[in-house]
Length: 322
Image 1 (tube, rainbow, N blue to C red):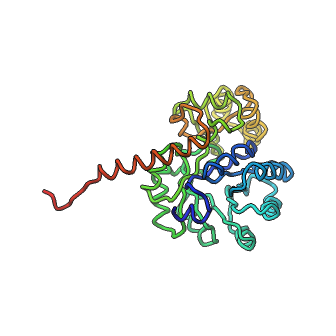
Image 2: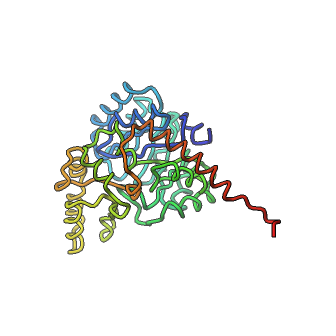
Image 3: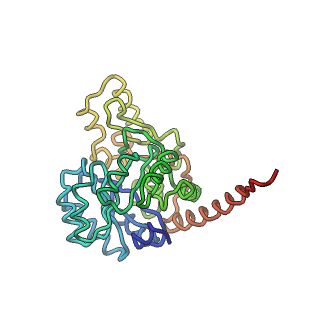
């Protein structure tokens, strides 16, 4: 147990990343049942759609789970906060915007607040605003990304040195070695997104899972850099077409149509990779099987302990030896 597991009342310091409009009860509940913290991401879904997922998740697990609200993505931030209060969801994570205006209300209703941050400045501001846990997300991560492009390996130790609240590492983490590395950098937990896609309980199309298994790290490409709308996705014919259009000079409106939540659903849930896209982080290069969520989390914990023990042996350093 550490500060992250104590605060969240979970067994293992592993948090599921929010998945926007492809979020679902099955995966959320599976992560929580396996000892982590499952998360429902709201994306641009309607309040009624999110409520349906919440109700189903509560039927599948009585363990804690979180609601992720992407502030500048959803048009329903206030309503979703009210939904978290109505359904007594213990944890709310805030991303893609300034969390400060919303933290007091969430604390008033005894919510634990996670803030997704991408720099030391973001982390310090979120801590000052009262966030309970800071999720520091590196540029390796899937989906919407920070224009700052700071990598996990450099971001985590910078933030840990400048804040007092516990830090969770996100971006490029999907196995025990990644978990061990996060702890070595000073984090007290990890947030995992892409790796949970390729699990048995995740109700995503087999084409999505197979593309992850086939992918190498270089296949997790960046789109939107030219217009300041950075997103990391898996390379497909659809994305190659989009990147060609971007090279020719794409408008923000056209880019938005190509990367809409509707197109995400077409790729991720319908498996049509010629007419929709799929998010994917650089950790895709480490994915080669489709385990159950429980097996994945258990293996991550076992392998992390093994790796840390081996690393300590390598660091058998005596400065007094010649």
